[in-house]
Structures are given as structure tokens and as C-alpha cells.
Length: 307
Image (cartoon, rainbow, N blue to C red; front, side, top):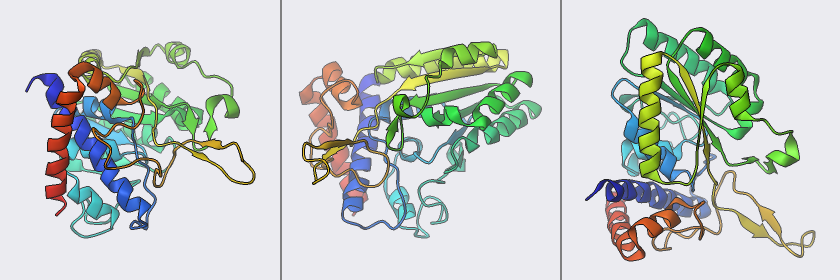
């Protein structure tokens, strides 16, 4: 397989794996909150691909795509969601705090913006210990509104620490769009005010993401500097609610819990017919026939794993 086919297989493993989690969630099998990440698969795979042994990854409550990307297996994660001792973290972390230190995923947090502050300490430790790795920390667009975001950038810059600060911008914070809840924050101007390099990624092409992030990681490590990366994503799984108060239907953005309109039987795991869905882009790049072939193989492997 070429690089694109390898990345496609990994992306489909995350997408179909999440669909399988979603089916169990729709059946009421989980007793803990889970935040699915349909639409985040390309950036999750790209970050996993660029990570070396000494790199450290710190995530948010919506960490399922990254845990699947790092581990490549579904059973330990589902067992964790059932809080079983056979789970990835022995049933101790659940979903919003799930980690995998052996593969560099050392911290996740259900507190908005909390992981930025922790990332400063991790990056400082790497610098003191002269580690060859860098710190990669993620947040959503809602985390830009937190004081810890601003303070952490200041500390990264002041202490000359290496790191990639990645903002997944899906334009939503729970049930409100950016335009509904606050004034616009120009992240590029904000980063430049601290002298921090800013890069914007969009389009869901995994090869482009891997190439760009590898380059930025090298720059960050060589120059001992923080780089701010804004990734435009769409968190898929929305639906239209119709009731007495909304006879014409009301758009419901997916935030957490089961996504009622997502069907695990959909082939090749497509949710939306445009480039906001990484799978749609892969159909354009590889062709439907090839994508169905890879999707069928991945689905069979996951079903076998879950027996």
C-alpha cells in the first residue's frame, strides 16, 4: 500500500471504531459521558504519525480519535468505557480522562483549558532533561476563552519551550456557535502579539497534515519555540429535532452522547457529502471502489476484534 492508502486505513479504523461505540451508546450500554469525534479523524492520525518516542501528547475531553489513533485497537477502549479492569487504563479513567502513557498520551482533562497549563510543565521538564521530544497540546475553539490558554502561551514563549499548540476549531462550544456567544478572536493576530508562529490547516487531507506538522515539529524543536496551529474541523453527527416548539425542525449540533443519525452500517462510513467529512475527501482521492475495499477490510477486522 502507498502512504495515502495506509493513512486511509487508519482513518477508517477510527471512524468505524467510533461508529461501533456510537451503536452501543444508542442502545444505552454506557453509563459514562462520551464525546465522539466524527470529523476529527484526519488531524488525529496526522498527529499520531508525527509523534516519536519522546514526544508527549496532552488532550481534551474529546480524545477518542487520538486514543484510537495511538493504540490502533478498539477493544481496550470500549472496555475502559465499561470501566472494566481489562480497559486501556484498567477502568480507572473512563472517557474524558483516558490516557495511554506508554504511547506518549500522558494527560487528558475534562476541565476546559486545563491541559494547556499542564503542558507548560511537561515542556519545561523536557527542556531540563534535554529530551529529544516536544510537547503537543490540543484544545477546542472554546478554550481560547479561558485564562489558562493566554497564560500558557506567555509561559511557553517566556521560557523558550518547544511545543505545538493545536486548536481544533469546529466553531461550536456545546450548543452555541462562536457568533452567538462572543466576539471574534483573531488567533493569528493573538499569536503574533506574543511573537508566536501561527499556521492554519484545513481540508482534511491527511498527507498534507502529516507533511506540514512534521515540518512544524522540526522548527519547534530546533528553535525551542511554541507554534500555534489552528485546524478547521467539523464535528459531525448533528441532527434535526422536530417537536411542538420546533414544528419546522431545529438544528442540533453534536456535542456529546450518542449521535442518533450516524449508522454503523453505512458504507464506506461516510457521514456528510462534502469535504468537512474526511471520508468524503478520501473518496475523491482514492475512488469509491478502493475506499469500499479498505472499509470492508477494516470493518471485518474490528468485528473480529470485538468478538
